[in-house]
Image 1: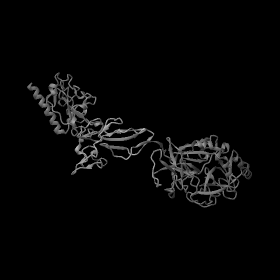
Image 2: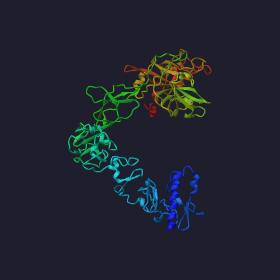
Image 3: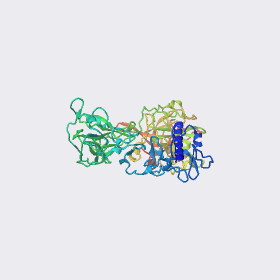
Image 4: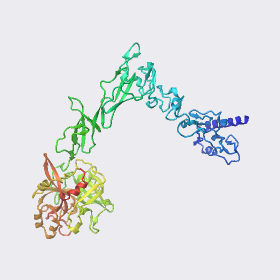
Length: 637
C-alpha cells in the first residue's frame, strides 16, 4: 500500500512537471504537448522493450510490460493487462480545468463527453448522455461543461455562447417574477427596460418594447396592461414561428410573444417580418400577409425597376428576384439594346407575369456619318462600321489579318468559309489558328492607336456550310459561322449588324437594283497596292445577277451560280484581296432609325494582272438568307 502511494505521487508529480515546463498536456492520441521540444516527445514514446523501466519516466505494468508514465490514467489502455487504467491506480488523480474526470479517475478532454466515442476506459464519458442536459451539467457546443443552472440565465457561460441560444432555451418556462428573453432565457422582471441588457440578445431593452412602457416613479417602469398575448392565426400560405419557444398553437396565451413571420415557397411576405406582443399589446399596426410571387429572370438586355407603392409618386426602387402580386414593374432596355415597341408595365398574376419584355441588341446603327472609302478612298472613322471584325491567323508567332467578318451577337461572327479552308488538304483549318478582333481601326495586330478600343477573342468553334468544298466547287456555299471563346462587350464602336432571317419579302425589297449596301475591309486599295493599314468602307450598288454575269468573262461568271448576289461598280471602286468575309449590309428605316441588315458575305472578285486587284469588276457575295437554318443553330441574340 505504501509503495502504491509513492508510485502514484511520482506519476502525479511527473504530469505536473511537464505541464509546467512544456505548457500543455494532452491525453489519448496527442499524449503530451511539447511543441517546442520534439526530443522530449520522442524520449517519452512507448518503451515496452526497454530493460530500464524506472520511474518517473516509465511505468511498469503488472504483467511486466513497460510504458511511458504519461500513458497511465489517460483513458486509453496501453498495458496488455489494462493495469494502467484502473481505479486503484487512478483514483487520486486531479484533472486540470476543462478536462473530464472518468469514474475511475482518468483525465480526458471535456470535449470527449457524450461524443459517441469511448474515451474513458470504463466508458463513463458516454454514460447518461440521453439525459445529459437534464442533469447537473450542461455540455456546450464546444464541449465545455457548465452548471446546468447557469444555462439560459441571460449570461453567456459557455465560451461559444451556446448556453444562451434558442436551441438551448426553447421550451423553457419562466416563473411569474421573471421576464422571458426573445430566445427563451429567463431573467429578473425588474431588469426590464432598465437600460442594462440582462438578456444575452438585449431583447429586454429593445426600443419597440421599452417605448410601450409607462413611467411609474423615479426610473422604474411598469407595463400598460397586465394582459396575456394570444397567439394569432397563421397567415394564409405562411406561419408565425415563436422565437425562443416551442411551437404554439393559435389561441395559446403568453406574457411575451416574439414571432417571426414566414411564407411558403412561391409566396412573399408583405409587411413586418417580426411581431412583438407584450402583456396583450401588439407593437405593430397590422399583421403581415403572404402574397403570391413572380420571379424576375435576370436578363442581359432588360433591367427592371419596381414602382414605390405611393399614389402621388413616380419613384421606383431596384426590383428583387421575387416580387409579390400587386407590385408594378417598369421594364426598360439596357444600354445598347432597344425595343421596337414601347415596353408596358408588368404585373404579377397568379404567379406569372402578364408578359415578358424583350429588347434586341442595338444593331446596324452607325455612330458617325458615312465616308465612301475603299479602293482609291481615304481612311474610315472609328466605329463607322461597328460590326466589322478582323479574322487573324497565326503565321509564325504574330497573328496576321487574312479576312473580315461581321458581328451578329456577343459571341458569333459571320465570315467566308474559304478564310478557314485548307485547299491543299480539302478540309477546315483548326480553330486554334485563329483569333477574332472587333473595335479595330488599324489592321496591325497590336497597333497602339487601337489600345482601349479593340476587343480580342480566341475561336471556340468554326462551322462551315456543309456543302462548301472550296475552289473545287467554285466557292459555292461560302459562309462560316464563328463562335467565340470570350463574348464581346457592346460599346459605342462595337455593336452587331442586324440580321433578319425570316422575312423573305424584306430581303428581296432590300436587294433591288441600285440599292446601296455598305461593306468594309482592310484589302488592297488599288492596282498593285499592298493591303490597307487602316479600315476602308464603301457603299456599293446591288447589281442583278444576270447583268453581273454578262459583264464578266465566262470564267468569272461561273462564280455567280448557286444563289450568289452581285454588287459593285466598274469605275475603279471595288473590293480587293483581303476584303473576303466582310459583310454587305443594306439600310432600312425602322421607327425613324436607320439600321443596316446583312445580306451578303464577300466571297470573290476577279483578279487583275498577276495577283493585283481588278478595280473594274463586280464582286460576288454569298447570300446570307440561303444559310438561315444553319445560322439559327448558333446565333444567340
